[in-house]
Length: 271
Length: 320
Ligand SMILES: Nc1ncnc2c1ncn2[C@@H]1O[C@H](COP(=O)(O)OP(=O)(O)OP(=O)(O)O)[C@@H](O)[C@H]1O
Ligand SMILES: [Mg+2]
Image 1 (tube, helix red, strand yellow):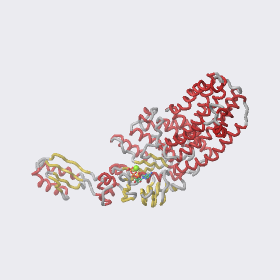
Image 2 (cartoon, chains in turn yellow, brown):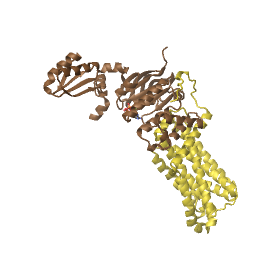
Image 3 (cartoon, chains in turn orange, yellow):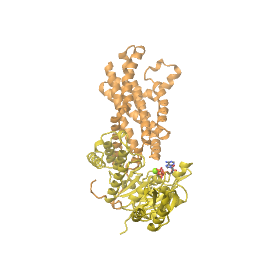
Image 4 (tube, protein in one colour):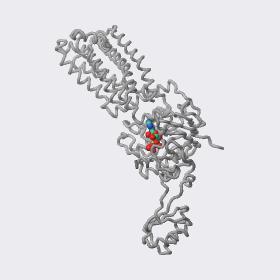
């Protein structure tokens, strides 16, 4: 044991609040923790790695001929679809993992440390963007292998990737909120997939809206996921920032505006 | 100089629904001492620690750590304490080093500073070899030590240890005691809970006995033991017909009332261990042979019986 004597409690000058810089540093450390954990349990990345690797060729070859008359013509349609579907489903994990984490003993230690209360939440959301980046990279990479050559080049791809990551990050607040209010981690997963499944499939991700029954077209066209996918198709195919782009961003902002305060409030009650 | 109080608790109440888990507890822990909170399962020991460690909000009364209110100034209190809870509070998914480095970073150390501190603490707690192993491969004792190490990163002047030796083997238990004593020698104050009277007696300068959320006795180990009676000397005679002579000899040498609970078995309160030698010598002189000699310490249950006049919660639960 180091022989330095401990500074007596009454002689310490201490502040009762955490500065913004400290909050940022605590959140980054919590994000770092999330990433170190992944190194130990890489299976946490299965969804964002395997889903694009499997789904991209699968959907491309199954639907390609029927829908677009060929694989090459279908790729610019399907790649943004798969990209959005994969990343949107990956957002659920945020809520599940956060909840699991909060039920573990180590959370009690975080709560007894002089750190910003919000840091574990902020850190978790921050670390998850890494998952989205991986998913985006692999989806575009798979597309490239299958012959996908987006018209807008690398800039279009980067812009599209960035948009979906921002959107996913905003969306993850919803599931973080569910993570706070439901009783168990597994029910977070159940509820979230129940919401996401229709949203991602009843969109323009895989088939042109025209081919759908009339009553469904209304829903699909109004589905924010459809707007996101259209926005990414425009960005990657011809580098256009259209009204779908703005609609997606506004939608994402609305989600954050509603769910971030709700989540933080629910979280602070527990933390 | 009167040393300032490290902990001052007044009329502390914490309820869970109808259950008054902590029901008006007062504690005064002087700086630089080891304070033991002794009680059976469900007495409210962990709840007291949880409130003091800012993990739970009290429902009544007040609690101060070095003069800082645990509710109003919780963030200051957190800078003054290290907590080793009853359940493990380290990250199962990480290695020992990774755990300590992350806690060190959260406590404001630089990356290199946190690594250095982690290595230092692991060395000190004999965990260097296991430093890179995932915690799922740790034994209970190793996890306990890591938990304590994690509480010491910031060199806090006040350390809470909730049942630090429960589940440890006797050797590891003694090591834990030594560690605790070293911490106090460096200037820390320690509040520990335990279910073992001998542990409280060995370690603590003062002890509070709690049951059903109330402090039912408080004082030094010696004071408490004096209040609950003394150890009992137990002798088993080889030949039962020696009983009368043996009892007479014991009465003369020890000067106390000697009992004969069963055939060839005599017991006597042991006020001074020195007299035991005299008794054994005297029995030898009378050619009385013994098949067994033992000393029975007062048990925690006896403490509760004496202090509350009823069996402890744990025992009640077991017989119901
Ligand atoms: N989070 C909680 N919610 C509801 N009741 C609780 C909670 N924590 C403790 N209790 C109840 O409060 C009482 C005191 O519990 P506590 O954990 O403080 O006892 P303890 O003295 O630490 O016991 P042990 O020796 O078993 O650790 C018990 O009746 C327990 O059931
Ligand atoms: Mg306990």
